[in-house]
Image (cartoon, rainbow, N blue to C red; front, side, top):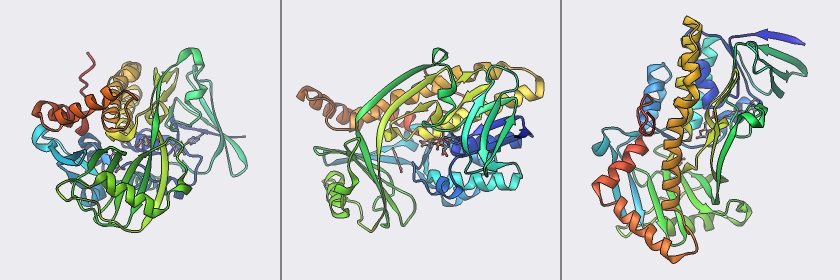
Length: 399
Ligand code: APR
Ligand code: PHB
């Protein structure tokens, strides 16, 4: 068996694992990233696309923001369409912060390029990944690459392997607590070659359910429809998708999305999930490996980036001074932000999806809430503050 030694072994080359490898490299710390999928798959996988200001700042400050600055689409506001009445929330005016629309796969592309320039290892298409000796000071990652079993010996393991990865399940059940809520609906998402007809996102609640208008570029629109969590895509020819999108999104002011050829379709379920703590011995979980939010608040990628910022700082401090204080605080510090985002994502999801419950009282209450949220400056400020995201150092719910 071939043995390799590094300071940090990183499992998973999604945004979390790649950004960690990059920040560690900038701090002069060695890492090996292993990924079970092929490079093209990781790049092509269609995911979310809204970056908080602090995610954008983190990328720019660390030298991976130049394409983001050129091609990212800064948005000062969002629209909420409440049963046909489209109202704008001016996030920049209310909070002084904005969001940037830039596909997660573009982030991944930029980070893979940066990894290439660093000359540090990034191995795709590995299999049989397992982690060992997590409570020792030399944990190990075992995997197979090109039919050869290999082992990484390291000081720390970063579990950045997403919700279905192996790192979290490697923690003994008595050392981890799971909090979870699965929603009775999913999103059917499409990419279409159609120029966006609104410069900003439109979140819409219609009698037939939620819909969302987003974009990827001046030529590509990204759209979502609330559906069953296990919706059968074969029942959704393109015409049916457009009928439903137009019905749910168009507003009384005459706005509707542009229609164009659909280039990608998919269904995703919706879940809220937190594993606590985000650490076991020398294994640190980050990103989707530790927490999942429903996509309504656009927080998934941003939470992953905030975890990684903390983890890289904590690891750098340990290697510089031998001081484990930030490593010891890592989980608690991350979880404060995670729970704030969990609450926000749950709230946006419950407020914007149909039906909340079978009780007509709840429908009326939901409508009243949406009226308030789109008319009261105080309520809009609260939504905007959460949507644009807190600075990474701050957290309202923590001490
Ligand atoms: N070994 C190696 N790699 C693995 C393994 C494994 N056993 N299991 C999963 N992976 C890889 C996946 O193929 C994926 O590329 O780990 C990576 C995890 O990446 P993501 O799922 O993208 O998760 P993360 O990096 O935490 O990104 C945060 O924010 O917008 C949300 O869910 C969205 O992916 C996004 C997330
Ligand atoms: C997206 O563009 O993919 C997107 C935007 C906003 C969300 C979720 C997804 O809340």
